[in-house]
Image (cartoon, rainbow, N blue to C red; front, side):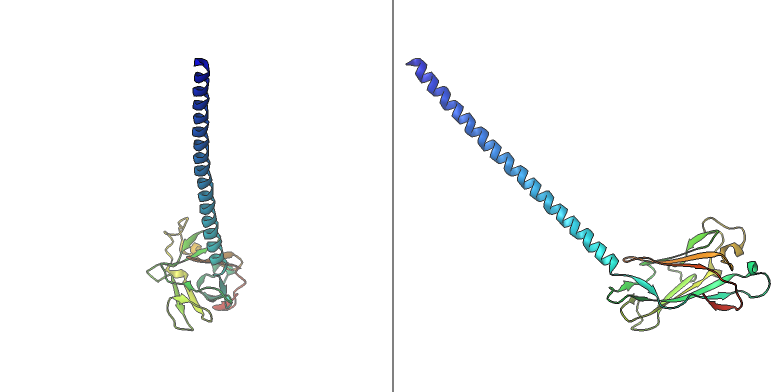
Length: 207
């Protein structure tokens, strides 16, 4: 009899242990499921944010709305002595694109030639000027508007370009040389203008 009671107590204890293990398993499984669901939600949120940012980038694009109009210091003598001193071009939005802030705190314009490169648009406004020529003429480029961008290469300091140059003519682009201007808004794709300067026959020439 004593042995039977001991067996029953042991069987009862075993059942309690199984119940405790089952509850612990359920709690652990619930916590794990919650963690998986939470991770999935965070991943979904991040993916949505990335997609939204990508859509914003894709839906904000600058387009050139003119040729690049160059002003040259002279048009006589050797072509290698002729310097591009100013560039003017116009930009617009693509159809259906979202507006772009063109203020100096939200826009980066860079210039490079075969010898150096530099940023030309900042708050001092001497190297590059960006202004609306149609629409309400504020700092935001909207659908149907045009902005005019003027870059005055004479305002670039030969000591501040990278790498620094010994002579000022090295800062300028010359005929038959490649140059690049990039207009990079805070949001949206970069407008890259790559040109090889042609033979220059006039002090003002489109190319």
